Length: 159
Image (tube, rainbow, N blue to C red; front, side, top):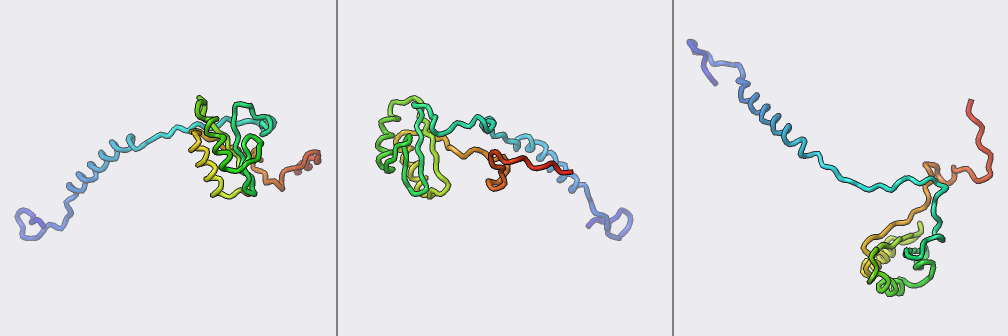
């Protein structure tokens, strides 16, 4: 505490000068660091395809490989049923000299997660370095039960 000039009473006012100095230093630090904290992560998002342009799995080009995992644990490599070990043996020479090492992976909804990871690990060990995940066609926000059936009459407009 300080003493007022000419009196013996202590000064009871708070000295705010150090507080203002600290606030200004913090303001400068935040002004300098804020532009540096803005980090951008670029993501390649697939383009939207209208539902009438969905490519069925039967029309896959011959140079592409599709590994399908069924719900009961069966594995299919380009529509040929086999075991996971047989598929891994067939994938190794197939991807050895290939420039594009892309494999398309399709798993049914009921397939076990552990088996899917095993299949992906086997494909990676065979030389695959890019895996494209195949998914079902989008329902555009409608649950499967709410989607109108083909040939069903359209609902009447609300009045």
